[in-house]
Image (cartoon, rainbow, N blue to C red):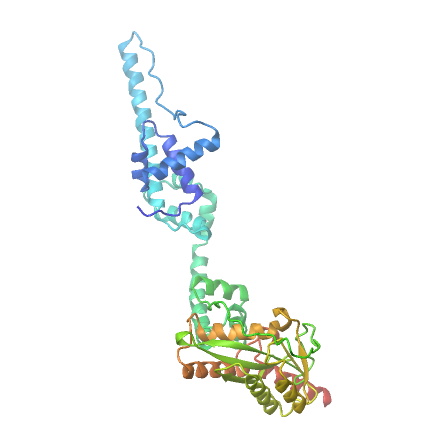
Amino acid sequence: MTMKDYSDEFKADAVALYESTPGATYKSIAADLGINRATLREWVLRDRERRGTGTAAARPTARPAPKASGDPDERVRRLEARVAELEASERKLATERDILRKAAKYPRRRDELVTSRFQFVDDHRATFEVKRLCQVLDVNRSSYYKWLAGAEARAARQREDLVLAEEIREVHGESGGAYGSPRVTAELREKGRQVNEKRVARVMRTFSITGVRLRRRVRTTVPDPASSPVEDLFQRDFTAAQPGRKYMGDITYLPLAGGKFLYLATVLDCFSRKIVGWSIADHMRTDLVTDALRMAARTRGSLDGAVFHSDHGAQYGSRAYAGHCDQLKVTRSIGAVGTSADNAACEGFHASLKRETLQGAHDYGDATTCRRAVFAWLTRYNTRRRHSTNGHLSPDAYERRHHSAKLTLAA
């Protein structure tokens, strides 16, 4: 028999049933409950050990027979009373066994346990007394009636949750299956739906609407011991008062079929987290990062006077890269060696990219498919994807709001 995950309450009820049944065997009680004989025996022995009683501890036995009386009629009356008593006890135990056997088939998840007991009582109230059901299942009768009185309200909430779940699925689908409850909530509110994030999270959990998880990352930061030291001008401050002043960048791997890789270099604006430059190649030479920086210069018009922060990868420490930054009049900033927190914002950006484009797959397939998927995500990231750092506005929307505020102040 396949082992089930029985609750502590069920185990206690099973032990109590065995201990309170005179002359019962492990086999008979186990058969009634639909469990293995050895399992029941283990529960009983463990309970006896906990209570400090031996395995030979006697269970309740039948009452000693009354002493013989000289009056035959009196003896008959006593025997009839005893038979009636035993029959009543047998009916009671049979009812308990029947209830427990049926209850074992109900859901046993911890978060559903109390609700499932109330539902069991309601489903079987026509067969057994409510009082007896509540006693056997160890639930409060008044709590059950309170639960019963709220049935209409629960049904209404369930109908509302179904409607909300469809709206969430639509938003979730539009995001490519990437959005979690915070971004879904922001999208719904923008569409005019007044909803609490906790409720969105609960409904997403109930209907299994969720994102995907990342796998282990491949190391792409290889320090160059011959590079000249560059000061860390960020000191883990990845914020900026206005766009175009502070940038950060990094390289990440893009897995392909057959164990091959493409590599992505990015340039992000610290103000809005906008991706202003990127480059994809099948190598990690210095050209990979300089191409991304050139795209950033074209996107912004100029990088004159800006600061660009990176890790200690050999590409960012090369002379060619340093010369390229000098041409663009960009001041370099590099974090500490071996400390991912010094470039955490880029690490998080790349994690989101792969989580939302791979969606649990091991690789992108071929190089063409990979480039297409990453390109689509990067462009959508700027225009539509909501970013928690921007108050759940997309990078483009966040920058537009900033420029509008500046024009308003100037007027």
